[in-house]
Length: 634
Image (tube, rainbow, N blue to C red; front, side, top):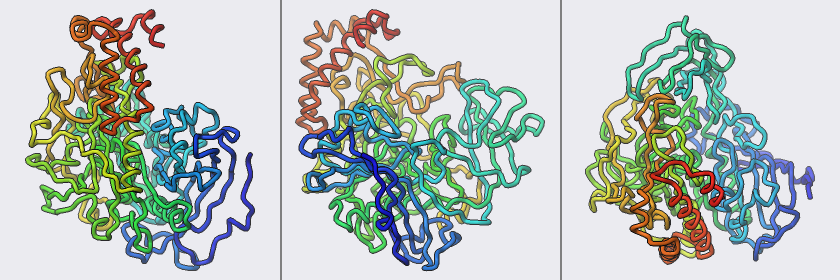
């Protein structure tokens, strides 16, 4: 069933701040009214939330360039955000908890993450809702657009913010081709670029290596065309092409954080839900860290908004909302801007000292001062340590001491994981080794339940599990991990969000530490899936680029490795398939006791264990499966 709410329910109240109105453009029953366990039927709502904020309130002053945004007759700045909601048709049957995801580059992800569902921008089929886990738990699900420059594709969610008219500044971006292309886009797949206001300001350099010397390309070697740079000769795979240009009228992008804050605050204030929990993956997890750090977990009346957060695979990175920010450009090996503001102090919920400036700070400093600290369960994979400054979440910047995380924070290393699990069976890609197929996502369901129990019933979650200096499980790995450094964006950056050094001036290196492996090559500590604690191979957080895509031997973005054990070793450790599966089931049951796996998911672990065994014994020394073996697996 589809309908639009009557117009009189959509009228704004003059002078009202926060969420002013919610225009619902679509409202329909999910799967024709199918019941999701005790929660019953769900409905989907799609529309746009309209907001207004007071630029004079202290809670809004950290929004860069807000003072330059146009104001309405009441002196408020107006903006809006795309919203999708899934809510129980019977509100009393829900669990009183708003589960809000920050869309990753406009895309919805938590149904795939928690429900094992097929990703979709417009969920309609049973496959799009997976096994219904989140609905069976009774959550009200919401996706609220927070990124201003999301590509204009159907189904993607964005925040619609005003511009700081007339303001000018420099925009920088990087592009590392994997093949000899001629076209270098000013934006990437995740965002629409700022326009070039002065074509003569556009410059292009190329370098070998993330920290290599920049070599300017002459005007005869390229031309500007539309929203891209076109090279005269094909680009060299693996080289880093960096462009810089002047633009004007930047978006007041920090209003995206206000949208998240005010939507959830309104739901709680009206009694629609009693608790609010935020979840996000990678880029969208970085947004939650920014929300807390920038002081947006307090609403305009100073009340706590989000009671709990589960930022997944953000590593040490967080989103930033400086003038001319590009939220889709996140730091990493040979991917987007390597000297990105997403890698900057503070990295931890614990207070630390910045090595270059002596500044002391933490991600929770403002929330602690305001008394609005949420309960946080961080999850990172091994990859985040190799490529995203993951160790700086819990180690001092000089790498000499473990930091004491506050009691409101837990941190779990998803042992032997890559940024997002590769498909199983794995296929040889652009790395030297098979990609890492360790599917740790099963554990995220249990960790979310732990978080809600902590928020609602004050039930302590499992103790943190991550590598430490003190016990010898954290150290300097081989191959070398991605380097993070002090970045100087100019004297007005920290106070006003204005970048005057572009590219930034790179200074002292921060510590680079990774989980240390055991004799088999697997991480010594962390939350281990059954196939990691009962291994048929080694799972790593790193993989290396091949010559086919250039920069051979350097870290491959977002990718780990799977290194199969020799057949003789497998047969020695496990005399039969049944013997292996018994060990897998025992490991899964231990995870249930440790509260890192749901009891209902144990059969799936055993079933997957069978597929793993069938593949492993049919693959000689890590080569691709034979067609017969693949048929058995699939």
